[in-house]
Structures are given as structure tokens and as C-alpha cells.
Length: 330
Ligand code: BEZ
Image 1 (cartoon, rainbow, N blue to C red):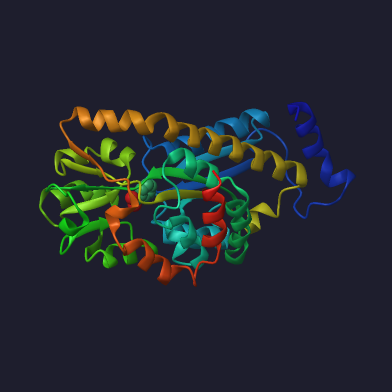
Image 2 (tube, rainbow, N blue to C red):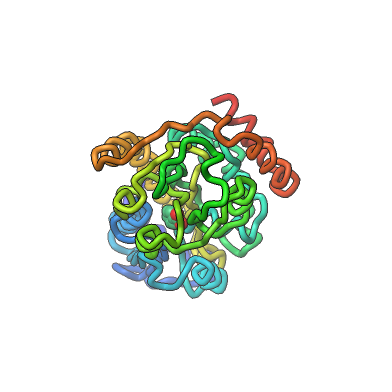
């Protein structure tokens, strides 16, 4: 879309078409968007939303002005979801984990070993089943723009772990959401929810023996210092979703909606590219710290746990079947 066309149409629409319920003042900074994210500024999720703001502003000649609030400045994700539902916050770039506590079917995206690596994860998260799942955010009063990736999950630990039997009776940090809690309970591991900022200390003082984590955080939070053993398991994806308050979304005309959607999609694609590029890099960076790395990517590492997880979640999360069929054909 040409910038001049966008601006002309946006300014003229209320008069010519009379369609939008809200008459907007045109001009630089007349459309303000606030986005909440839980990750710090250095994390790729935060960077992708910053890029979104810059790109949207550029495409609209400054009409859209986007402010990103990183590091949970507006509250934790549960609080941000409430704010988005009420329209007090315009947008969020939030973990699908938090949404799975409200929409059971979102657990489908955490099916263990659904995909084997970040590239397969990117394909599944942009495939027909996941795209269709975005409609479910309407039940929460939100517009779902698209899923993105936060890498694959692995296990880091203070002591070496050779087999899943070594995990029994241990305490592992998890992100608190039911599908992951079940996964760890099935392995006889005590799942311990610890917010990311407290994880380094929790590993240092032995509050937990290990953590369910991605390579980006293992590297950027320097977790290798306190948990020098890494099992590359790729056991789950860790998806993120871009959402907007339904109340806010409905105030935009079709052209504005289209440019917002298109810009989010571009930045989600950028984000997929970052994980594809940096995943091998982080692995070698972590190795360079002296970390002991074991490849445990075979499904057999988890023994009967994958089937047991499926027994619990397949009845509650119907999209698992379609996602598995898609993943099979990748
Ligand atoms: C986590 O809880 O592990 C997490 C949270 C946000 C982004 C990535 C990971």
C-alpha cells in the first residue's frame, strides 16, 4: 500500500463512507498503540514488537505511534490479559502458555515432540491449523494476529542428567501452565514455578535442581553459570501470540486493520528467522562456556511420558490431531 493512499483514505473515510463508529483525528501520533510484553528489551520478542512499532509508524507517515512496555512493566501476563480484555491496554505479545490456562485447546501447541526443531515449529505455527486456532482468541474478546516462536524447550541442571530416571524426585523450574506441569509431574519431577528474573538465584541457591528453558534464555540470563549441564531435548515449542483488544480492533477501518495485520505478520516472520539463525549459534556459545551438552532429542528419552501426556490432553485439546497430521507431512 502506498503511504499517501493510506493517509488520504484514512482521513477521508469517516466523511465519505461514514462507516467507522469512531471519527479519528488524522495526523502524526494521532493513533497511539500501547503493547505489553513480559520479556526484557534484549529478548527477540520485545525487539520484534519494537520493530513493529517503527514499521507501522513509517508506513503511516507517523500517524501510528507505538509504545512497547517490556519486562512486565504493566504487570504480569494475567494482568495484561485483563487489561487487553477491558481495552485499557491495546496489544500484547504474550506467551501461549498463559493463554492455555484460559483456552484448553492452546495446549495443543505444547504437545511434546510435536515438532523436532525451530524450523518445523515455524511451519506449524503458520500452518492452517494454528492459523485457524487464532479465532479462539475472540472468545476472550481479542483479535489474534499470529503466533510466533520463542525457541524449543530443553533441560538444564546443576547435576548431569544422562537418562530421564536421573530426573526423578528433582525440582525443576517451569513456566506455570497446566500442560507443562503435567509433563513434569508424569516424569516424577516437582514442577516449581519461578519467574524468569529469579531463576539464576534459584539455581544458585539450590531452590531448584534444574529448569525447563530455551537456548536464548539459557544464554542471555547466563544460566550456564549455575546449571552447567544441558540436555538438548527439543521437547516442546514455546510459542508467543500477538493479540489486540477486540474493542480497540473494532475501532479501525478495513484499511487500518489490513496494515496492522500485515505489519505484525512481517515481524513474526522476522522473529521466526531469528530463531532459525541463532539456535545453532546459542548452542555453540553455550558449549563455549564449558557447559556439558548431551543430545537427548530421541523421543525414547522420555519413555512412556509422551503417551501418558497425550492421554490427558488429547480429549481436552482437539487441535492436537490436526497439528500432528500437519507435522507428519513437513
Ligand atoms: C519462560 O517462562 O520460560 C519464558 C517467558 C517468556 C518468554 C520466554 C520464556
